[in-house]
Image (cartoon, helix red, strand yellow):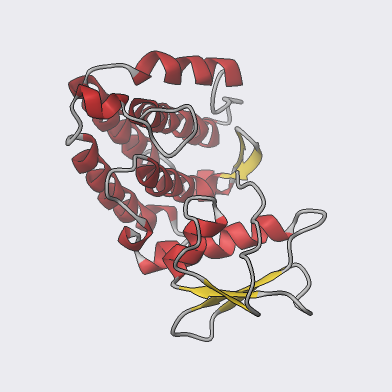
Length: 238
């Protein structure tokens, strides 16, 4: 998948359209149903996605203007906004998702070329502005799974799944004591190694299933392990 933020906007627009279709299928009871995230309803997930778009607009604005804008005013404010928005009616959720998606697209369009070289202060630390569009795409695609409404890893594009797999593996590999494993994609010679390859189990399967398992969104039922044994336990993802 390209790292060019402007080219990636086509992927963001398509992912947003898919998300809106799913969100539009929920009535009030559907929004109040549990998501895949502990303690969160589907309404919490949708509220988070809208506030996340606002946060990314803040970061794009910071990159464009040089102003030290944080992604969120604070962790407490972020959590309070999600909680306050979770129980809204279906139409309010849809309006909020559409409005914030448009704001994000407008903020991307307003970025001059040189602003993409900036570094901004994301929730977990400094982040290159050039990766903000990828970050938004990742939020939409992963949290669409969390809605538990029929959208699964196999609905991801192949390029998205590959990039998510490599990024997550790199994130885990940077830990002080990473779990050793070799991830092998079905139908190709593509392998990703985490930790020490010597003696590490080989976990094989379709790329979307590998990626979803590695980020804690799948139980690994579609994966195989060599030699036979239990799947390793991936570390907690971001």
